[in-house]
Each structure stands twice: as structure tokens, then as C-alpha cells.
Length: 88
View 1 (spheres, rainbow, N blue to C red):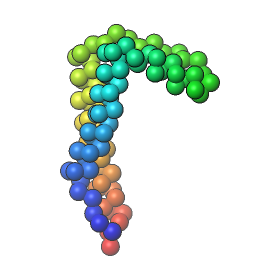
View 2: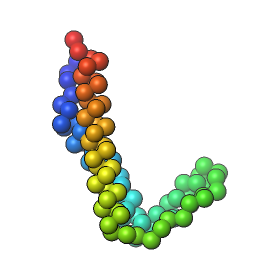
View 3: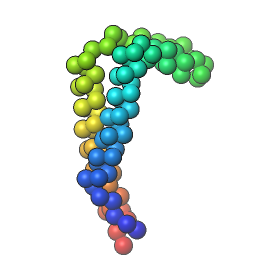
View 4: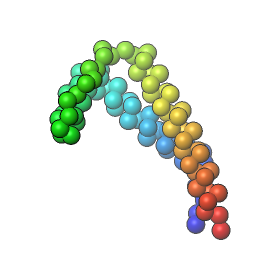
């Protein structure tokens, strides 16, 4: 089985997770986040206990950077573990 490149896997996972949080930040900035949360809870037949706070650019940027870094670390660790467990 082919080995995973740890750097590429880290980057892909980091971009994916950071990208999701970029989208979330954009939803907050445009005022659509609360509607989405309410809809998701409604679909699951639950009451939404959360209220979205006002958009803050600094916090949004920090959220995206932190989730990108955590995603990179997780992707790197995943690829490393995958390679160790799938050695021929």
C-alpha cells in the first residue's frame, strides 16, 4: 500500500478544517449563522440553546488560524500512524 506524504496530508486536513471555519466566520459576518444553527437543530427535533455572538474579525481570524494548525497536526499524525500501520 502506498505511503501517505505527511506534509501534504497535514496541509490538506489543515486547509479543509480551516476552510470550514472560514465558511462559518463568513456565515456569522453575513448574519446567516443563527438561521443555519436554528435550522440544523430544528431538523434534529431539538431546541437551539445557542445564540451567535456578533462578528469579530480578530476572533474569526484566530479561529481560522487555530483550526488550521490543529488540522495540520492531526493530518500529520494521521499520515504518520497510517504509514506505520500499513508498512509492507
